[in-house]
Image (cartoon, rainbow, N blue to C red; front, side, top):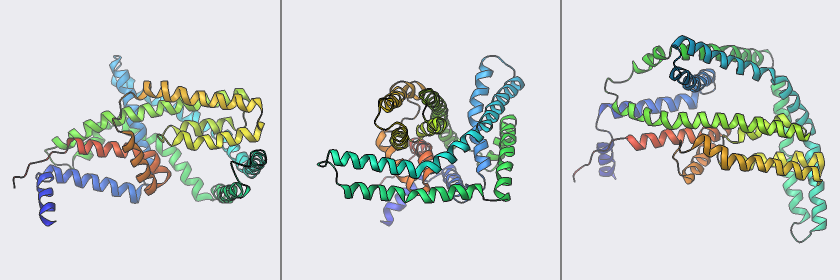
Length: 351
């Protein structure tokens, strides 16, 4: 065992740069784990600036000057940022109404299933359905309690939210404007020889930017189309459902399955087993089919070259560690691990 570990470290850690890369990965990982909530505005600002940098490069490729590219890009961001906050009162109102109606929705779905049991007694038993809905209903009080706690959290929470609202655009402004200066601060602590780190970043940047850009566009398109279609059909909480369907694309494979449950439940509560409910469900699945077979391949292509089994494994592992945020970050983290594995040098040890 000792010889194996000795040969392993001799094979994979034989230069200063490899130890520097390992140290940097460990420091970043520990910082995200222990300080993630405290530095979340900085992380959000970096992510937004990272995406907007691609837009700046697009304008530069069109022949525009650097300053014009910067101000044009930042103006687009401020417009989108303002638009999001203008819709927050409507979103908040729909969330409150939906939380108040959740017990009634659960009771209606339970009654509907009981009617189906009476019609088809060979498929399900009354005890099974009662157990399922008892478990489901137990989550409703906790959800409502958390929602009310957020509303009544007090002055400190309100001030914290206001600080983040103001701070994020400022951070994005400087991350975009002074990108070279910020990168200079980062590289100051790195060794002069950075071939390995450059290879890791190059591979990660190619894969990750394509993934984040594609997912952001997919989320916006799917969420907007779903909200508009549901609104035209007269669906209750169309905006909330559209946001949920849009966010579901960020969780590969499992997102569509998870979001289908509330979509069907709200549709059943509004229309029952009516023809309008059938039209609603058909429209929803048409959106999902178009997204999976047309929009996703067009936007993503081969940007993230990860096997589906590895994606599932990453979702299970990081979702188990960090919950919801782990589900969202599973693919980017797996992409980082793949980039490190792909370019990390190995020296053959003669025995």
